Image 1 (cartoon, rainbow, N blue to C red):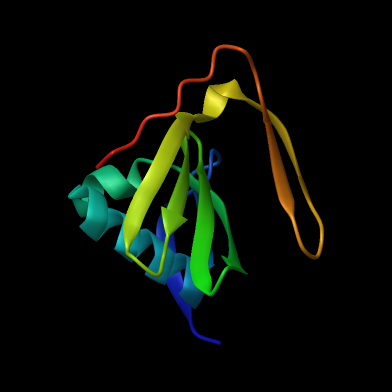
Image 2 (cartoon, one colour):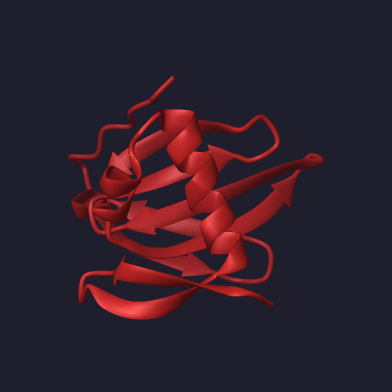
Length: 110
């Protein structure tokens, strides 16, 4: 698996290699939302998780500022929320649950 260098990675702003699938997901996010590479780098990428449902591919991107829910099949962001509203998440083999506070507002970018 190829790894890509990343200068600003996570809250620590550490230099770490990035997985190829994470880089591809961030590239899709950048293109669908229309942000610059600099803006994308300032999102403080933390992690991404992919899954399939009803023959469509989806992924969730966690950043220091936002959580994005993305339909990879149709190449569009379905919603995003501010990361500060996330209270926790749980992942197992078949599901991911994101717990959020009462102050959450789901924003659709498209």
